[in-house]
Length: 490
Image: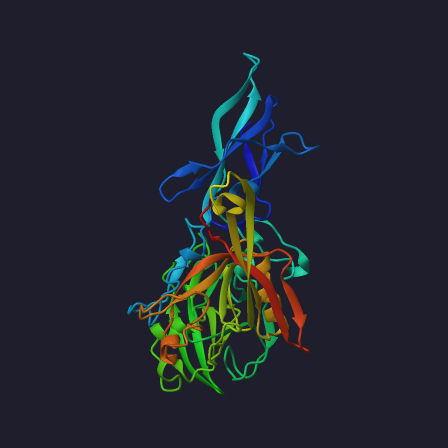
């Protein structure tokens, strides 16, 4: 008999590689011993073997039934990092350049990969008595894998379903008429129920919204991520809506047409931070020059057009604009962090509280015992020193949800710190918008909008959330730079 696949991921779907990815086979030929499989991934130009050949597992009590879980293997496919985000660090006032389009990053061929499995029958040859491998290959569906999964705290009933449904909540795809979707964004942040300050933000009246929230300053970027998935037949592509609010009125509504086509070949990140809005969009009178009258704005993904009553819509992300001055002084600097979330995307958060820096020095020494040729030829001598600078960050007061969100930085395997460089090329600086350059003007500090990002390590067991009020908290943790200081040896 031929190999039959009776269970596998749907063709061209995207699934989580952190949860089981099972492919189930049957092969009832009496001489069959096992099935031997080879996982392949698409590099963009060719199918390439990933890992060696694998024997399937037999299902006890079910003769001729085999299965293979490839999640651990495909989880090791190459992974991109924060520096793959298009437009990261650029914007107005940055090297005199322009920032005129929304930057989208499709993570296909960076972190998300198309894979398939080839299976062959391993059997006992009746003519030779040897175990052989059949030349006939049974090929599985090709599908996409993504290294990320919903946290248990956000999973329904604390249960995560593997396979086709593992990333369903984050796949912004309309597949049926008259069906309402509340698509979610790929983030460690938790959405919350809130009434909008202005009626008609998402519908008529003051309807209760499920929304994400974060603060944003005019010089900050922020990337939100989703799977802008393949739509059902007859549906127009999604459009990104940016709705600005001026106090108690809707100031304007901007529409962005995705340059990434709707398909399941990887998640997409787009920069919707206020700094990017200032450089890209044209404000009206209610928004003011450089959006100076905007108090907050909403971003959400929406199916284009009311097609037969379809209601494809994502949860909105609300950005509250913070126009306060950046903290000054060595003991109270601004810090902006980015980290890889449990869902495999990137979150950003700014801390404006206290900072303490401690330097740890470890030295090794020996005692010289030479002849009395000079005072330098005897006594204790240091021959090696290693230094580590540990920074303790204590955030400003933030809400319960924001504190839980920010504390997720400790669980990430990839954390970055924003490093600001002055846009006018006078000098470089680390860890803040010119907070130690007191000889420069306030305009110089405000114009320090170019930046890059350096990797850091959050120290184990250092993260603490402590209450300061009924709904106010501070988050405290320690970090070091991933790159250590080096010193000469003797």
